[in-house]
Amino acid sequence: IDGPSEAESDAIIASMVTAISDFSECGHAVDCPFKDIVDALTFAVASAKGEGGKVDTGEPGANQAAATIISDLNVSLPPAKALLARIAMLRAFNRRACFALPWLSVRPCQEGSAIFGGLYGHGASIERAGRNAQAMSMELWYQPASIASRVRLFRNLFFCSTKRLLLDSITDATTTPTPLSHDEYELPREIRTVRINRLKARRAMDGTDTVAKRKHSVFSQLHNETRSWGGAALRRGFVAKGHGGQKRAFKVKLIGEGVNDYSGPYREVFTDAVQEVVRLDGTGHGALGILEPTPNNSSEIGENRELFMFATCNRDLTNRSVTTNYFGSDEEQRINNSFSSLTTARDETSREVEEALVFLGRMVGTACRHGITVDLPVGLESVWRPIVEEKIDAMGRLGELDLLACRQHTESPESPSPLLWWQQRMLNSFVEGMSHVMPVEIFPLFTGIELRDILCGNPDVDVDLLRSVVEYEGYKESDDVIKFFWEALREMSSEERKKFLQFVWARTRLPMKESDFDSPFKIQRDTGNAGDDANKALPSASTCFFSLTLPEYSSKDVLTEKLIFAIENVCTMESDYVTNDAEVGEGWRE
Image 1: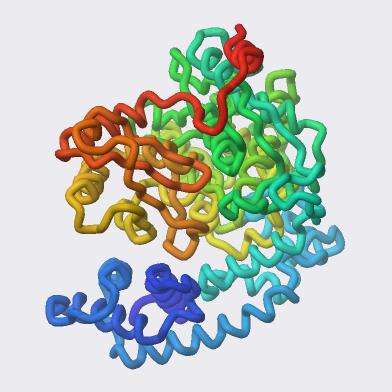
Image 2: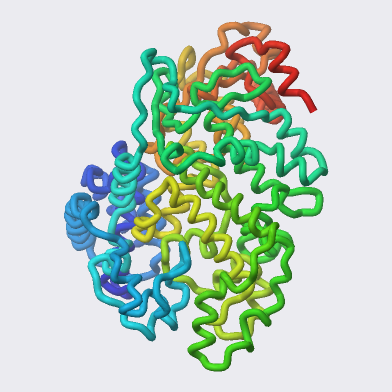
């Protein structure tokens, strides 16, 4: 491709092949039928010339994905045959990389050696993430050449599916073995039970008592229940018979709710805990004091108004005296900048936040191991790219959080903003927690966007993606009520679609592609409410089995009204058994 370098050109082509393969059945760019790639590329090249309407072959989604990538280039393209030859070369390269990557070290020991000056030139890095932020210090010291550094440098040449294959193989290899129970329908004793009182948590979160929120929230209950567990306990991936293929590290007992944990409650606690972490109190701050809205979010300025950042613990981060104008020489200032995230003493509040962030990292990592995407709206520049050690623009990172502070920052980009070094310190704790359950050492193989998509999934509920995995029981695609349902779902707001997804699957985000679904979405006919009774009944769902039981409503308006009422007002899971009085009393006790 004219304009970009050879490596950048190959990276663009690799991203296009990955986007096309997302719409194939296998989902792996190496195994995707070459005809699908040819059809999508032909359409994309024709669209760039304004002739897209003349090409009607291939999968529409794949065609559009390839056309979008090419249209963003604004450069002249080589002939389609030349692009296909380069794609064939990249596929052959990635096919060999699938076998080679497990044998290569992503972070060899000599890169942290004090003999060579370490990554900063001051010995081994103190940071868990973002080790390459101090570009000036790195340039002053010899960086030994290695295969690992080249692998990280050319990470974009590897298909995302190639890297996911390596990540999955490592997580499988590091899964803690769990012996089977004598009864195949029972969970083994190694799968411990975690008791969660969601009723008490909701009362606390709806109140104004900050202490009660941090004591009784689902996040805090889960933290307290698993506080003494080592990483090995959370690295279990047991799949019980009849649980819909859901991997798990523990069993969930929802106090006061008549539900058995066949996987729905397990997913629900992760979803509820993350929702509490990003919930705001009456003053606009984080209810649990773990994450808080960015200044851009609070002031509604800039392009990233929906993001959260790690809590600042009510510190004044405008005073730069702790990091500037103290050391005389440039070398001393660089050393000070290198350790800037540790230049402020810890207090009780910061210790509690760092401890909570370690657990948040453990929870996000555990969810990832078990195929549960979490709705964690943190910044690409401030979190995900530092974790994978991509090149970071300090001003872009600051602007993502606080655009006004970025415009007022007149000092050298190498001189850290207090807000940035505090975020780096909190990020170290978050990544420390992830390292207990995930192989964070291989994260530098991914880009920040790829890692965010793996952990957080699709930020919007893609109706077309959900429709591609649906199965009907008692209905047909052509039935009026099914047409009403899909039309109503498309007309919902993003928040309403997230609530619907939690209603039917106990999670608020979908996977990124069809091949990542472990089970289909089932829509079942409600045989108990037929005829005239259908319009009076509410839809019901089984989160354990990703299914929606839908009465045969007479119109779209009735279906929309009943469905929105159900997703807005559901508060407990009660369908498996009748809860006894003692358990109800415990659940509702103040």
